[in-house]
Length: 227
Image (cartoon, rainbow, N blue to C red; front, side, top):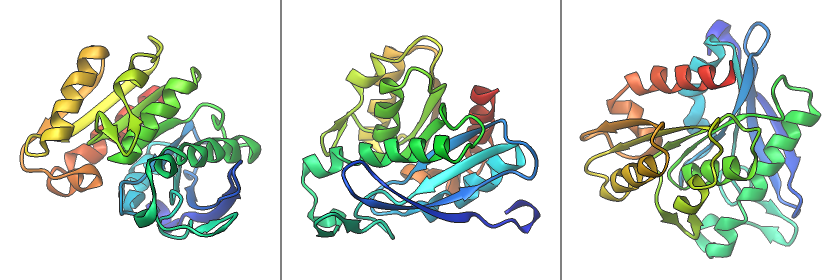
């Protein structure tokens, strides 16, 4: 992390009683805004650390959370949560985690906390798009390897509700056929999307392992949406 600054461990409770754990990183100076980061399955919040570092260098704060049933977010109102046992309704309920993350940012007084850019990978990408569709003040969503329908979380209907001022960043690799086709379909629904297409680059946050330039491109896009 820049300046040897480590993310702060935070926690909050969703409106349906799930204890969510997160990592929050502020830049060294005043933040120009904030990004909420949603991991893929079965990853955790730590998968976003490379992007959090890039964002901090650009003056952007970031909050990466463990979605319910993953990592440290396993305490629910009725006992332990395990994503491996989830039904579609449980995956759709992850949107409460995103809502609670934005609420935590606003209540903590984070600059721009009421209008974060939302970034996700795989099912997290679908959740990011869904959140942006429901919140007109959100300046954009970035989706790494989204799907048309991941575990009941759909995207074409949500992108169709984006406002003209909301940006959309899409990235996928050609061999990941589902996500690659999804990106092209979503880009047709929103022609001003930033569309990044790769070959042999993998899926979700794995994309930047083989295509490290994606980290800087994504971080720059997020900072531009916030400023």
